[in-house]
Length: 452
Image 1: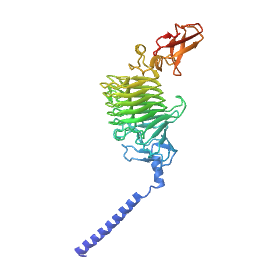
Image 2: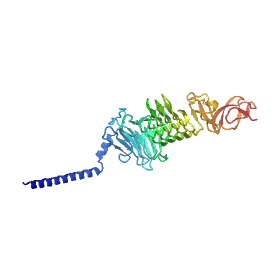
Image 3: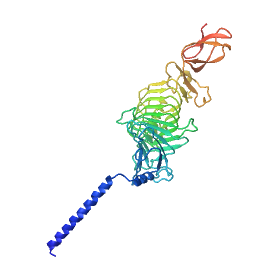
Image 4: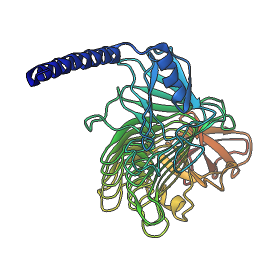
């Protein structure tokens, strides 16, 4: 065979080989585009460290595995209808263990509700810990859009712990703007504290416990039940930049409402705490914050140096505004307990009710709660209830009114009421008659005055 014929034969063979390769590649692309088989779907679902009850895989939720063992898989929840409730718990055997905690996973949860459909999700002993998995730049649990109703299963304990730049339970304002359409509500199964579920949400340094990640604000967060611990933790030798509940570092915390549950919200570090307990992160304002019920502990706290955020209100160098307390049992501490952070403008605060752990000697004489005067027609009085040792004072509503007192003797202590609600004890003295008298007291209830 001549050289020319050998070359031609070789070229022909190469063309045939190229055709085969092209055919194989085409087939591969077609196979990739084909719908996932049922077996593959089952394998995917079974490879995650979570178990999901309710809904349908592929329709209401799915899991995206990651073959890189240094990274994490992602469980995405998006219930297709409001009637679907997804209950998430842990698999019996973990495939993707957290580096920090062998009982936790480094798989993550992301909630992306279908437009116009609130996502109803129940957490039941879910444990995610990314604190030492430094290659994972993401939150343990991220609420990305829409409305999420997050319920804690009765008597369960869930832990959502992220790394340094993300909230434990992250909810970043979209385009930096608060939106009521993007709202998180946390509650619990069970009718009392003994039956409530527990949620521990923590960030290291820059994120909030619940709320914004680094450089992000967070808003429209409501706690209605459960035992909640939310902490931005700076570690023993660093600082905390996020709020317990609210903004991450440089992020505002707004439209935060506590109506029930037991809430412990902290910006805590060994050196400095720059975020608020509830409100803004470092350099973040805390606004439109309401406490209407529940047992609330809110702290900006540092064990070695100083806390520059408010307990409830603004982070360092930022003010608190439109802070309203109408009820609940509140313990607050920080640069200011309730108000603004260090080196910030005065806060706007309205206190019309509630029990407070302010044991300062001048609270009653000066008629203040943590140095803040209550709203007009309201007073600070001693709490004479069973919890008086923990919450020595309370705020009540008062108004100048006239009373008819029948029975008893002048000078005897009576419990009077105003606006239909029992409010304060007042000594009725100087009233005419032994069995009946017409008496009153001034707006501050300092002394009864004789009317007739």
